[in-house]
Structures are given as C-alpha cells and as structure tokens.
Image (cartoon, rainbow, N blue to C red):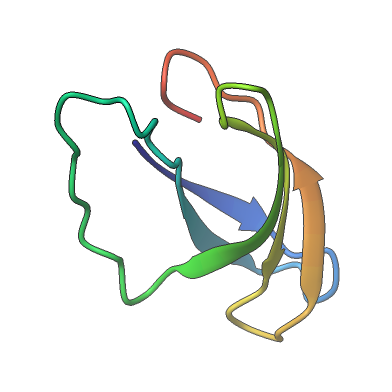
Length: 79
C-alpha cells in the first residue's frame, strides 16, 4: 500500500507532498507494485505499528529541505 499526503513545512510554511510505501509481508500470496512519484518527497524514517503502518514519519520539505517530523493518522489504508 502506498500512502500519499500533503504536509505544511515547519520551516517555510509551504505545503509539500510526501509518500511512503508500506512494506508487504513476505508471506503475501502476491505483491503489489507501485510507481514512485517524481514530484513527492520520500519518507526518510518511520515509527510504525506491528503491521508496518506508520504512526510518525520524518521527511524533507521539497521547497526548503527542512527535516519535518510529524504524526500520521492512517484510517482504512488511507491517510
């Protein structure tokens, strides 16, 4: 599953888009593939539940390169 969302930068106050691909379990019968977005920032660090869905992420702002850390509220596979 790929999570995609927007976040307001703590430093420059501009909104940027970020994404995170939740790792699939090795025992999955089949694996989904995702196209990595070009215009979105990739999550650099994740604190996650046992099911690997993130609760807190760290990502660089695509406007000013500031490292933002924030909580993620994931419901039913979407942010």
